[in-house]
Amino acid sequence: MKKILSIIIIGILIGCSFGVQGLFLKKPSEETTNTDLGDFFFDKKIELFMTLAKFPSLSACVIEGDQVTWSNSYGFYNLKNRKEASEDTIYNIGSITKTITGTALMQLWEQGFFDLDEDITNYLPFPFRNPHFPDNPITFRMLLSHSSSLNSESMSQNGYYWFNFSDDAPFSFYPFPWLEEHLIPGGIWYYPERWSTTYRPGEYNMYANINFDIIAYLVELISGESFVDYCKNHIFTPLEMYDTSFNLSELDIDNVAIPYHYHNGEYLQINDLSYLFGSKTPPNKYWRILNIPVGGLYSTISDLSHFFIAHMNDGVWNDVRILKEKTVEEMHTVQPPGNKGSSGDYLGLEWEILENPGIFNVTLMEHSGGNIGVLTRMNYISYGKIGFIIFANGDEYYEQESPLTSIVNGVLIPNSLLKKAGYNLFSHIDFGNIGGE
Image (cartoon, rainbow, N blue to C red; front, side, top):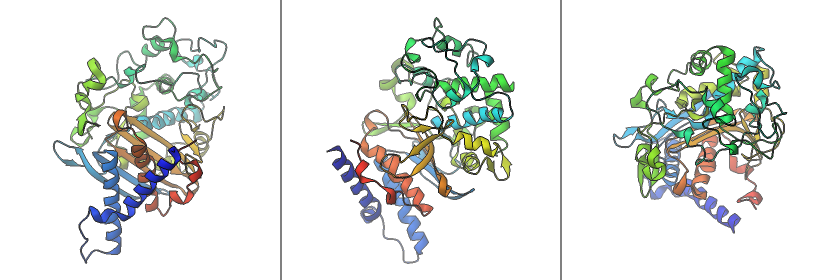
């Protein structure tokens, strides 16, 4: 029944996306060219999908080779003031931030500061072991591939990830001594469920945000720079990512998208969500999270495309190299233990590698991000050097989460963008896999 329902939904939406626009649109003028007409219907299709997914605004781009070949924005990133989204709109990018954090550490690796299979305790001011497997070292590779034996988090267990601060980073107690107090038995914020009792370090991939808190701390210890300064000096500035920062004070706040959560027929700001957060309701309408290396970065699709193009093209954007070719190859290679792990995907060094993902017979390299009022995607079909980036200031959480929303966000909008580059994801569909078992 689940398979049948999913097929029906996909069929209806595919039909809507190509044959129902006439119900919603004015007739194009006779002066409209074929290209303009195609763009007109494409834009209306994306707007329809946004309505179904409850996204107030969306910015996206398509990359072919080493160039952005299409970009556009839709909707309002500030609903009260009716501010229209553009390629200069700044969004919180969620967990895509981890690809920046991983790149920072791998820049230091390629300079010979450490070995990927080296025990990270050698670099930390406290002994770092899973207390259930104290004889098993935890390595840089394990952190980067989420196989350190740190457990995945639930929202209830790890509300600290989404605490909203009034000030910018750095914070006096983060990453140290916060990490030690959180990860070592007896620490102020320690809880036993953080560590796996089943899997030894290196045995299983379990996506856990905190791996990247540790990675950022290692970047600081090895480089001698704060994590914020390191990323600015060695990634953002060389790649001309001038509207990208961990700190809102460095950005034009009037261009920052407000995160919205759809609830009971209206769009609410995160500081209006007491029904979700209770006493921990954020004091302001923009996310300022403690754990910036995990999901705290703000950027535009234009800025992030520079970084993504570098990863798509062996470490180079616009003749600027941020990584060596062998480093990029290592990051994009499935890492041991080579299982799909808790995320359902194979993992490289902070890149998710989707072999025949879901219902499609293709290989994708990607990372996505999500929080309340935040939904982002960065996907890449490697053999065709085709990629896309999507930022939205809506979400899939709670009552908004449904098969319909997931299909719109995860299938229909991405396929529409890929078709802009002449690639039809649906031509690779395997209907036998729709809906799972």
